[in-house]
Image (cartoon, rainbow, N blue to C red):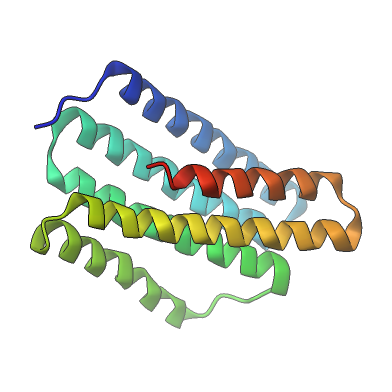
Length: 170
């Protein structure tokens, strides 16, 4: 088992706390404004915080089941980001058949981690998917900023763009 430094674990824990805080903020915005996109942002961020808990547990124990959980939850986070951005930009309504998309990260993560036995390939594909959906959400907010002049949307767009790039250093 690879030994991870206290700095790597601390960074993952810090990211978990920040992500959980952002999920709580989005949920409070949903409660205050009753905008569906805030609900889906809160949900996606909460799932991402759970994925970080799974990652910290994997880094601490080396048990592959936690890596699998992290990968599945990261895939669901990407789908959540994508759906939240679609709700924000196009007011897409939830359809029960959307649940079928949740199967992809479950199946893919199992294949990549347990059958292909390639951590880099498993993690790489999940991270690229998360990065693409995060960047796309940034583009959605940038377009909103150009339409409305919203400074907050501009900051969020830039932040999401930088976060999309940051995902790639995983």
